[in-house]
Length: 301
Image 1 (cartoon, helix red, strand yellow):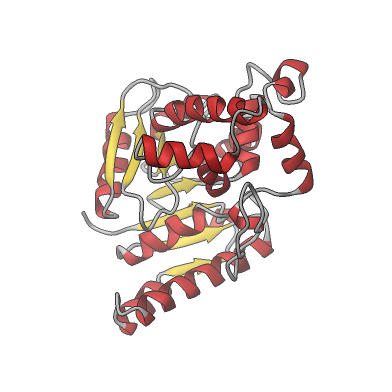
Image 2 (image 1 turned 45 degrees about the vertical axis):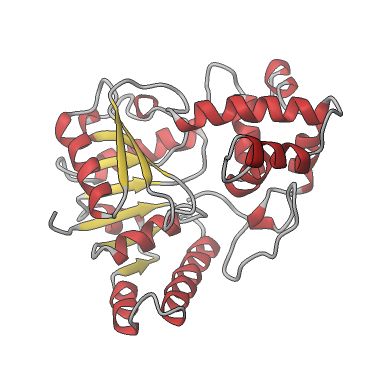
């Protein structure tokens, strides 16, 4: 597959990883974000990641410098998107914020440019409403840590053209990933529908005083042979994202803040959210962590 210009909109925890992986695969990558702090953190992440690959002997210094030269940070949305052939959105998991962004992208990107959302739960049909070219909108869900995880869920909604889904599949393969194509939309797709069912039961076990987070993780990791228990996974993806899903904040049929949605969140999880204990990126979640250099606690574009 010939390389082309990719734009990543939103270079928080996952977006910055997607950008680096794409640059390593030979693509010219333009990164844009509404937060200057997040852009600085993304640049620091890419520098540290590439440097560590060289230090560990996994890459020649010249290859790292070449990848670094293909990463561009800080340009505005128009400048970053208009020449791109593929846009990957990785902003905060809020339907309204994403819908507004896709409305903006629809007016900037060329007609042949694919507009993909990295959302882990929201079907792209919700974001393509009112778009002049909904046929080029699809889901392309990467898993964190992106440099390590192979699976990419590509979801072709009823509005998505075959050529757009095919281009997403081809891009995933060019990035060294294993794409899985879903031709029917469902909130959470495959992996997260299964994982949220596990997490809900894990939270009940802790809430009812039957087991601690550590004990649940030990049971799932040792008994089910999962590489990571539900509480370690919640720390990895972010306690705030898990809360968003449980409250229905990314499902417009159940607005966040309603009595029904709030009651779906265990009190211990709500307390962690209020305290800013969001997992690995903040240093505190269900476990303690050392926050990596260049990491921001802010999610979003």
